[in-house]
Length: 201
Image (tube, rainbow, N blue to C red; front, side):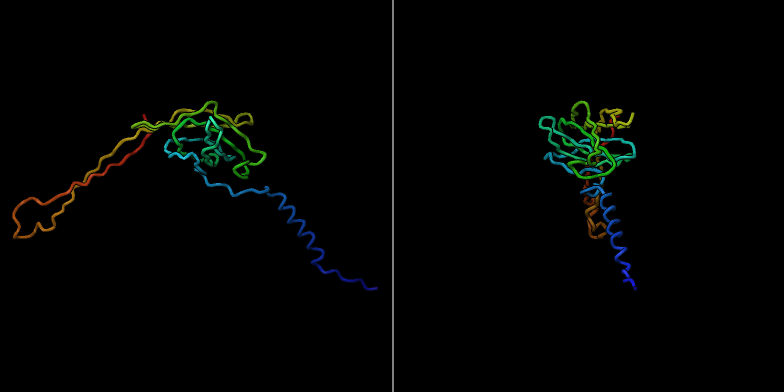
């Protein structure tokens, strides 16, 4: 008695769908694309001009949150790629600084999913500016005994100076006219003011 041939795709398709399901389950559910390093958002309503520098170790990424200490509201966030230089300009005020860290970015509510770890600064930090000085902070995070800790935190002050550049511009194009009286040509003094910042010594 002849047996009915089973088409090849009838045997292959269930295995193919099973493979797709395994891949889908292995991916983090609802994961967003990892943010670019730097400022994620500023909801403070204030200009961000004061420096916060964070030094980290490679192997995981970080999100730094600037938080209103009175309301516990997040007013600013920045994304840090572990081991890379990071500077965030922060609004003036006194803020709590909180770090989330992990390896697989998810979203803003749970930055690295259920494996998100948190590190907080012990005290609020005051960012302020004077006439010629901007006061910020530099923070260094390290991993010790399997936990992320603050290795050091100190002031980072930027001194501002004004650089004056002048240039003389001739305005008279007819100085070679033979009928012209021998008088000095007209000139304009072009003045340029530029503000520059440097780390205070």
